[in-house]
Length: 95
Image (cartoon, rainbow, N blue to C red; front, side):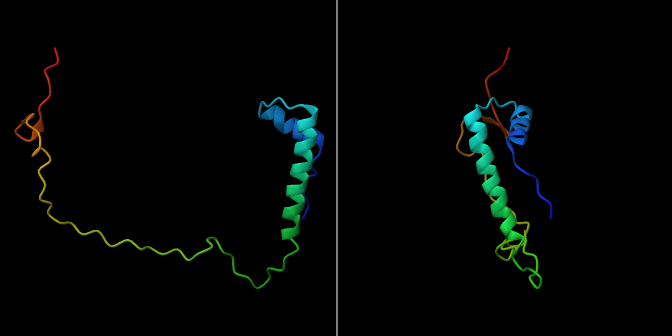
């Protein structure tokens, strides 16, 4: 598999596109860091995965929630307020 080559010009171009103003020292530092990261990922290509099924999650995903069941709920939301009228909160008049 062909990979990008990380060089100073690529880092400068990405920084310009990101509107980042990098010093020459930062460009050199990021060039080395990105090259190291890319070479580490290249090592993954060497792993034999011929008989390994793809894994999209490290653990089995299953639904642990119960089914919803409609139930009557006995709750009066206005029970603790004296600012009510019929089934509504009563607020101050706006003039």
